[in-house]
Length: 205
Image 1 (cartoon, rainbow, N blue to C red):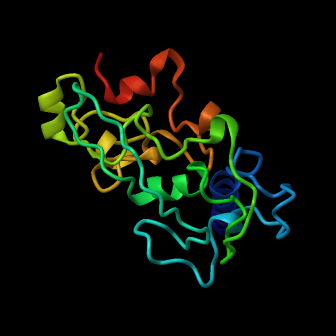
Image 2: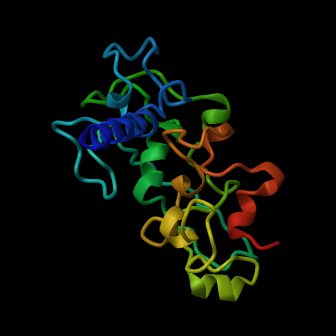
């Protein structure tokens, strides 16, 4: 019985290692083989175990230069929420994707030259992108009429939209995108958008 218990523990650890630590390998955020990353490490571009930046909320052991850009948020006459300046994890995403900071500006470096381009470049004008940093709650869903109630609607990831997809009650970049590519979907989506599945998680029409 003891040997079976040990075997099960080892099997669990092996599975945990595969799914928790192997997700980023081979994804769009695997920078191991980039010519600007001389460290030979995958995680260090964003995270470090020592001397991390603790000034940004929700940034675990952050190691990359953080954007100081002012962004133009999305606005629309039909939007029942107010999109503010990017907060929480969105600011971290934009610290590469706004095009003002080089991807190799990590570990204290600030003079890099490798700037994101093409479809990966979001820029500082977010007026034509899905609104982020908006409070998504029951009140908004009721007022809008076209949104599922995040406190009760299932996210498809095991719990509610509020528990699985929101950050301090807000819609952020990581509400739709998995930076570590855990879902294995195109465009680093947390939920497959086949038949608009990701969109329909929150929108009820």
